[in-house]
Image (cartoon, rainbow, N blue to C red):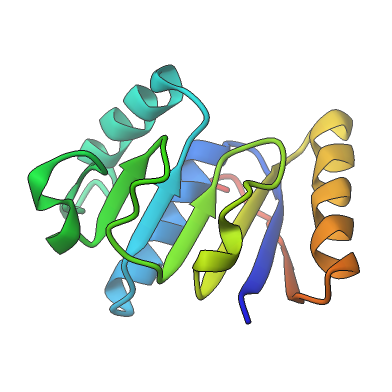
Length: 141
């Protein structure tokens, strides 16, 4: 069954997504960063080219030919090159999350984001998924 992890209190959800992707990649996991729109996909793509500052994180879009071999993939549709780790940058639960071994939900700092995060947490909990939670602290996350 899919394991769902929440990271709450993110000052910058895109940067947190990059940090978590980098950690996962270094641990040998492949990551699908799923976004709701092209604008967010473009911002994330730009950020990944510069994160981390001292290394390179290979990545591409899910529709590109090399997606199956990339450790980090940005997607908007249901074209999945793998089913290891989904990092969702949506405000609601995506319908296909259970196809993945792990799901990471990133929750921002505002009360509105926290309320949406609590609804997603309840959704997973009510369906019996194993849940984890990490409260983020520090200037970067």
